[in-house]
Image 1 (cartoon, rainbow, N blue to C red):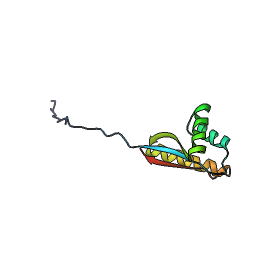
Image 2 (image 1 turned 30 degrees about the horizontal axis):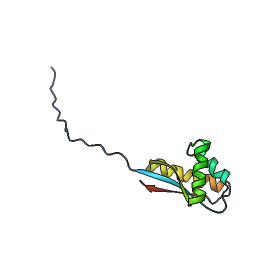
Image 3 (image 1 turned 30 degrees about the vertical axis):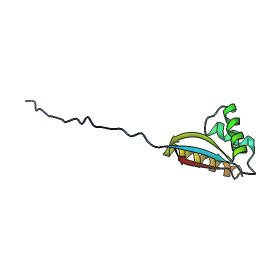
Image 4 (image 1 turned 120 degrees about the horizontal axis):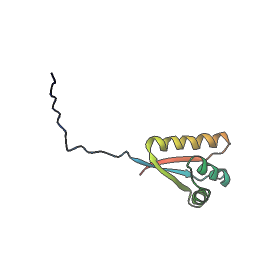
Length: 99
């Protein structure tokens, strides 16, 4: 004996995409340009040429955007930058801003 089940499906289902956050590196007077390039290649998976361009932007404009990520990934990248910079004795800072 089979029982019949009825379901209602709402056609008004709307998906929201997660907010995105831009991650920036901030310029300082002590962190070497080579270290910034290493961070960009290692943490943000940039090519050497992309890393050079972003590093120069950080140097000339005071900050450079490394990428756009969901909140959790952006937060993780910021923490990775701060941790690696601290381990190497540099005051390099990274921030995240809502897109």
